[in-house]
Length: 129
Length: 369
Image 1: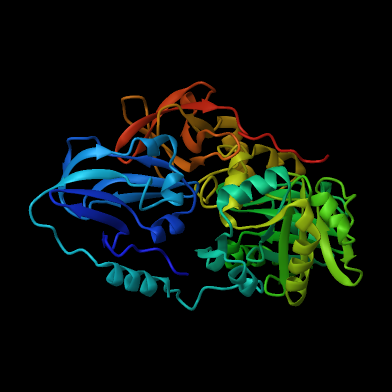
Image 2: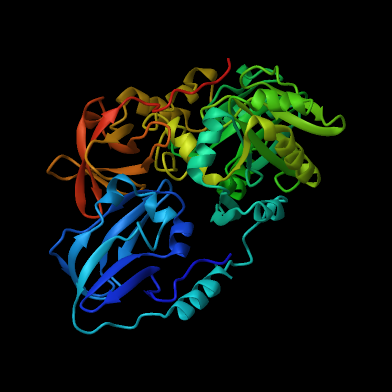
């Protein structure tokens, strides 16, 4: 199955996407991730003003079946969270790269190793087989 | 994902993949967890009907002059009370009262069929064989040649009628029949969803025909193929125990609220002395159902703590209930925390989230009795 992996975004192996715009960045989960989770029914988001290292847990999404942690693709301080997801977590399934965005952060120094759209798509292809 | 080759597949594996199912490992089997989605499939079973491939389940045939006496020894249930053409829930217990497995025992003309959990097939068979010494009994594991489907939901009766099955079976009734005119099956009015419905057994070689025929017959009634995800959420709402979660060798029938399956008056059986003692002393821990009253979802293995205090128990199953729209759970707590209205904290990602004990089952089963 082919998943949408927009060209202009960068990706983490833990299936988050990140859109870096200068000093800030927006983070969500990929089309592959939302499909693998199934119907998302719940989300825990971090508090604005808190900082996390790259690869640290920033929240969790839950389907009927299971809970999955969310990881920071890069280090940074949370400056905004998508509160609309709390009442409408299904937007993560229907629009993972748009209305389903999760947090905005102020990027800390030193963005680590992120994947390009091609590299992430190849990674997803590999774990599916 | 990379799958170790030792996972077993049911004869319907290719059907599941063709229907777009997501396949996962369960009890050593590669099974569909969902097709269109767990919520959609759950709803289909509550409002119309669902079809589940449960061919991973184990089936043993028990026959011979001492079949009844043997089953009376290994099962806590009173097997003598199950007439020909009937079935009932039964437990295999150890001498200390710990639960080896939960099973369903079907009484057929001249034999019994015992359905066991997929992950426990080898262990149950060895357990039963070991206790069959001295009995004139033939115990055969027919799991490899017997397929099993569950047709569940308010439309199940009509759909079964469409294919020529005996939809007039009473609750827990079982009968040999033919569907599509010539396909020999065993039909039982049993299930694991809290809805009316049937479990249908047939030879593995005929399973694809039965699956295809049922899906075609049920299409207009809204029959939906359903995976293990919905099977779990449906049984959870009806508070039906899942082996490895609510029941294990470390739990006894009384703490699991399955005392009704332990028939102490029927005569000797394995575990009877221990169960008599446990019953007399009273269980110190008990399975409870609870609702999360703060924001959070309980999951199996999460710790339960006294409000603001020490660990008192463990969650066995938990999820957002699709039918009731609440975050619910089941778990073991000391007796003093088990009455309706009692409150405790469930530790969700290191954060205590308040929960309150509620009545079980969460969803009142809609069986046709």
